[in-house]
Every structure is written in C-alpha cells, then in structure tokens.
Length: 137
Image 1 (cartoon, rainbow, N blue to C red):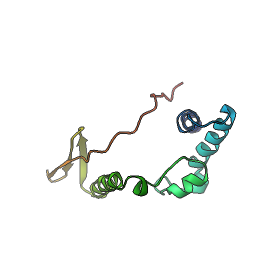
Image 2: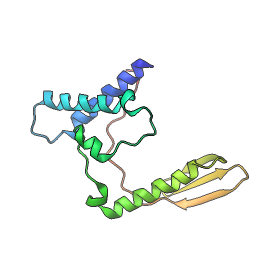
Image 3: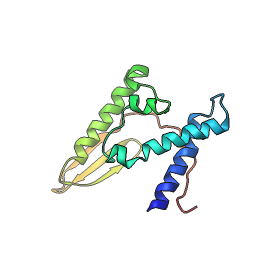
C-alpha cells in the first residue's frame, strides 16, 4: 500500500512540474521543488484526516497550486459545475442507489424499486488530460 501512495505522489509531482509550471520562467529544479511540496501537501493524511474534507482554492493557492476562483473567472461555467455536482451529490446520497450509467450526453440512474432517472449532462468542457500512467512501473 505504501508503494502505491509513493507512486501516486511521484505521479502528481511530475504532472505538476510538467503541466502546472510548464510556462513558468524558473529553473527545472525549482519547478520540481514546488511540485514536491504540493504533492506532499495533498497526500498529508495527518493534516487532512479524511478524503471527504474539501481543500479550498484559497488553501491550495497558499501552498503554490496555480488556481483561480471559477466563480470570478467564468460564472456561467461555475454555475454548470455546481449544478452537475449537486445533482450527483443528491443521487449518491440516496440509500437505494444501485447503478449509474453515463454517456457523453446523458446519465441514467437505476434505483432499487426499478425507478429510472434520466437527465441531460451539462455541457462542461473537459480538462486537458495528462498522458495515462500505470501504477505497476
């Protein structure tokens, strides 16, 4: 288990150095140093105590994560993200949820008594994804 955590930290550190600081005019060593500090911050179980506790954008910014407040930058996108989040939060908080299926345009939720909820997924642009990484390297 510890090897998986170490590998996860390593992946995050490398992605941050490569993608978050890609256009920064600083030495590669400084990029890696910043990235290592951020990866350690996010993986610090003693500080965060639980996976379910949110880390605010203000808190992330303090440790060096390049973030912006989406509600200021793009209020329309912020509203769509919040709506998407709240819909799925309501679904997953249900004690009778069995399965959820999602395509590019809609989702279907199957509940215990055979109830189906079908909804349109908000048109939220996908983030640029880093290349896939396997944990068994």
